[in-house]
Length: 94
Image (cartoon, rainbow, N blue to C red; front, side, top):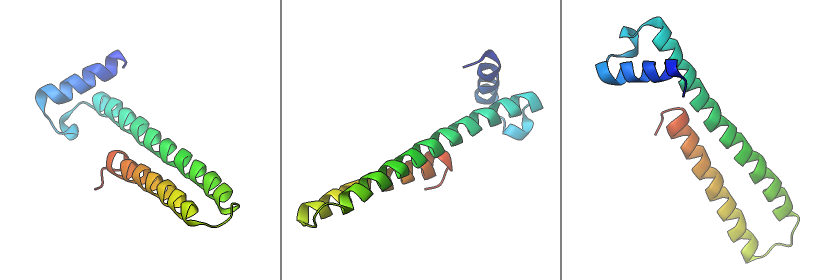
């Protein structure tokens, strides 16, 4: 973490001021950090979707049986979990 960001985070925590009360420079530092977090969660979600689509495509080429349904359900649950993580931590939604 850069020195400027450490200072901005420390200022926000120490004063417990809303971001609107921080200096513009400190606000920009915190906004950059938020943007990096959003990008990280979006990147993880898109990578998971790409992996899911490739695995689902391969799975659909196999003969149909009960275990195939379980494997697809397992993949779908993993995708759903990654989506929940992105929504909660990336977007702040529940």
